[in-house]
Image 1 (cartoon, helix red, strand yellow):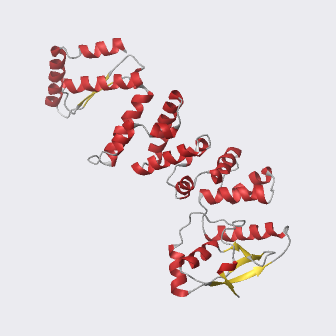
Image 2 (cartoon, helix red, strand yellow):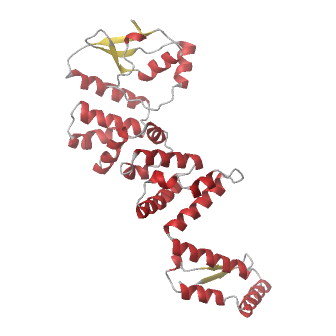
Length: 321
């Protein structure tokens, strides 16, 4: 039967499982070939309806300006609602993969709406959603429905690495949003996200400020607003800035070492490397050659470096470090 769309409560998400799923292809399908599958609606007491299955179809129809839509209606007892939810869930899972936000909302509904015991969720429902049976993952995902829309969208589109899920709940809302915007501005990959987050978190904790306050610092804004720099250049400059804030002494020592190496004017075939994190007591020299003549040239260059006295700078660097 056809149901007037205005009689459907579009704000009711009791059964909703789709979050941040694109509908452009579905909208094009509705426009070209019409509705193939009817909505499944629950009849409410006030002669209105709420969607059990078909949220994306309804959204697409609304976008096309439809006034009514084909639907099947059903009514029953509150106890039956879990069966309807379960049926819809398995139908959806057979057709597509759920994003992390959708999985998080499903878990919340199981726990809060249908009062499924946590142990049952861990044993049966996490595997159903293709999540390992790990209580900490349940904890991390349970926080996602409370996050800001912008943060949820970043999670749903997989532009925020899963490795940060365990830390997001400890941040305030402004900090979560600021962090997501920062990552998106630089188009950071997941490994770089982890590195930057660890540096920013440590600096924020040490300075006793929020992540949002830290990311609002003038030094960061100046780098981000430099139009002449590419994203790669901005990322590298910010990495150096953050490492300088996080490890001030080590960072200055590294800078001085690299300046000493530049002053030595070593050819590319000769590499002088410091102890890792300047925690050892030995520098390492690596060089490459193909012929005896190449080897002799390397030896000559090293002799010139020693004769220049510039290697003494390394001695002073080590003593001060």
